[in-house]
Image (cartoon, rainbow, N blue to C red):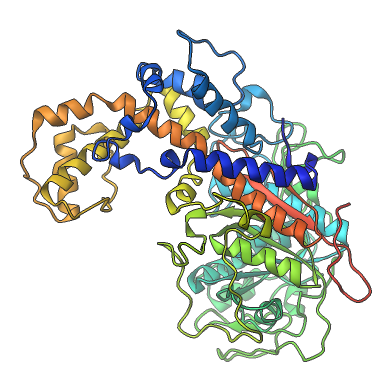
Length: 617
């Protein structure tokens, strides 16, 4: 099986050449919209022999014979044309592997990983304090990616991490409280930043309550809490501007000793005598990986918070207390105390009861510490921007990049794709001339290949979950009819209003359980048409009977989705290669649970003059 680390530089370039040729050959499939199946007669665009073979396939057969690359026991009722066999084989061969190393064959296609077998909403490999407010998918991701980031920190002797696109701070919280790293999270949405800091406070409050219940020792302060910075990362800014943005950002800090609504009196009463001597309670250091990662001493997965007799262990008192670095990424930065959020003052802030923002910027000439850059599902161009900062900034020693939302990537053909996040009204000034690079292609090699262009639709298709759709096919889910419903409705809309093409129809609750007439009655007003618009029942019925063909055609397009994703990610690997940096692409998450599961990681070795000469260990 092809794996990115096994490919030489020349093999990567050859793979890119093959990918662009293959995708340009079948561009008519990857660029098609399934809702236009009838209005554009998409079935007729397939070779006649393909039509004859594919029209009789049942949904489970589509999954087994077409989409499942790991199926080695295919059984055919008739001979398939070589062109169709070659199409399927080539799509599978050109795609980067998506199955995590060590995952057994019978586990592939499971809706949830083994860690959720006991409780479908709680990972058995993650401590309970990191599961609060976190959905199962995110629990799976932060544990896996957090472990990888910690490994990169150990390899590079870095203790600092910048998490870009940190959202509500779930990964940031795990890296800081669970793995003992100094972490700064930067997020464009200030509401999410406030939530992240609020959840930090709730975590510390939970630990303090458990300590009191168990009569544990006072919590010792050995390092800072994670810092959450509200800021939009400008893709046109230089790495120096990025470092200044993180270093001079306003760190939002909530009251870390009590949940929202707790009174000052209750806060004081809940604190031990030793805690009160230090102010508002000291910060715990949660660095025991066996406790919060669920790993035993030999690195094997184990169930955390449980003893051998399956009784629960206190998540705080069982933690081994070890000192960690007491400095933040930018130690001179102070914190923002939000109005109405209580009297808590971050240990690095001057004592104050006011609500004004107090910021101590990074001083000119002050040396910036080395750090690891990470982005969990950084949307659109954000992943490409992080890679450029990684290459240019001498202080970034490593990166882990998990991309998503490929349709929001900018290209020369479409510099402003739909859904692109608009910059703030007053973006940060840049110290250098604005960059003109786009999100794709990043590498000079791919940019020079004929047919390298990827349309918005092809990149949008690359975000689909092929494993989830295979599950629907094998279960013959009623959800499969939705593409046929929407394609049929599209013909009704165009007949009534020809200039209206592919309008957005908001999701209709449990639409797959409704008859089409009811679906149309609910959907037509959402595009400005009357709900009682007359329907040609005979024509509508004829289209609905072609549901199987719609499913097959969508599956053909879906077969190309991981091929498109491979080209986008390979282009980024080639970009790093052109800058002298080796990289690896690792399937880290369970693809049936987290479809965007490929992590691009790279390291740089430090040099005396801080140049970016890079090698992998």
